[in-house]
Image (cartoon, rainbow, N blue to C red; front, side):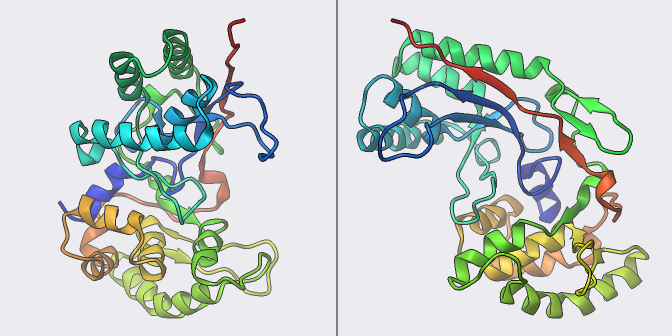
Length: 303
């Protein structure tokens, strides 16, 4: 398989998946919580054209909506997903990153969860129908657009592989999110030490790749500039993650998807110029694919 297989396990727009829908109104706000629990539909991996969902989180929220205490609901949700995941191949239950490097959970297509809930009679039919209806409406909406061209896409219209401009990963939130896992003293507003160390390692690698590929693979921010950011080829961003959190579940998932023996082999393949055959462009922010806005649905409890 190799590292190009990883592109099929990542979203089109970048390593971090975007929300495509938000479902609220399931429980009353509890005194111990600042926010009412909700359910999100998220951007699928490349080549998939339906929204994905964290099944454990979703089942837990639905059970709590029906009066089951939070701890018990989470326990049941984990047990149920352990049953369901046996029938879902790895590529259909990817770990999808959503701005929390310490907890990158397995996600599945919303329709797979809806079918399971219906067959298992785990929650009321009204709740299952609400989730199904929210998915149907989400699929009808344009959820992404190209910042420069203004072109818009429904999920069904997304390309099967990332467009060249989407292969550029902007280093804004990801390095800090990863750094917080290994630098307890790290504070926002400055460069993580782990990133500075990795940047020193990757600079000569990036120069070597540029020479062989005849294309830039990493734009290094001018350190004294407030209007510049690092951005690089997606494989180099993944190399950073593998270097800083090699034992994380997410990195183990990437190794498994690529069918490689270990993380060190994956790191070598991520900087192997032979693996840069998918077209890519290193351009500025205006070339990004971004969400237009996510759909919003509110559950109305029956009296």
